[in-house]
Length: 269
Image 1 (cartoon, rainbow, N blue to C red):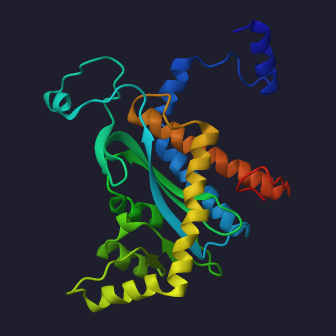
Image 2 (image 1 turned 120 degrees about the vertical axis):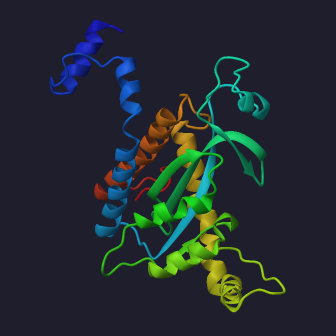
Image 3 (image 1 turned 135 degrees about the vertical axis):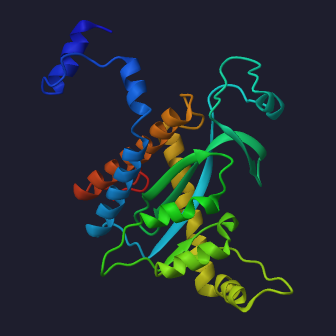
């Protein structure tokens, strides 16, 4: 890198940097900051609520697969702990997708707002073998609420259709809305869930997913180019993906606070 450029960068940083950190320094830092980033994403989510930028009454939960960098590690070789070639991310795991069958990838779990301002409020990052219902309680535990602006509903896909999640949501003061099937021996409590989901209100709440969290996920992937990933290893991949979400939150918050309105900028004020 040109030395004159280095000096300009350091000057732009207020002279706080004596030199530009090397790539290994960034790699080491990426391996340790994942939990800190998740906490900051939660803090930003609370800020959106406290500043009345978003309405938290109806939220949406979803997950998305994120492609790994490099080759696939086939199950037969994985069981033998044999790497058939270089460039395999050994931290990734196999998981099942109803649309893609078996996949060797990572997974981003997300809860977002709905309405006019669509922004991430809580997030986590796992390997592809972790089911959505195992991460839900962690996400909702960090959701932003205030005394006057409470969560009423969280919509989610069939992967969250779990009795324990319904009970947990009720205990926290809101209702989980998922596609629920009615069987011959369906319990009375589950019939109520089926009836609400099929009601006009339930369908309206669930339909918000298609114009909120689903396009939000694809937009973030596209803007930050994180699918496929350009790093290997869980800690680095987690940091890169969560940093992208945090940066997106900051950009949306800045636009809202400065009243910048641009129809070409998706999900901003």
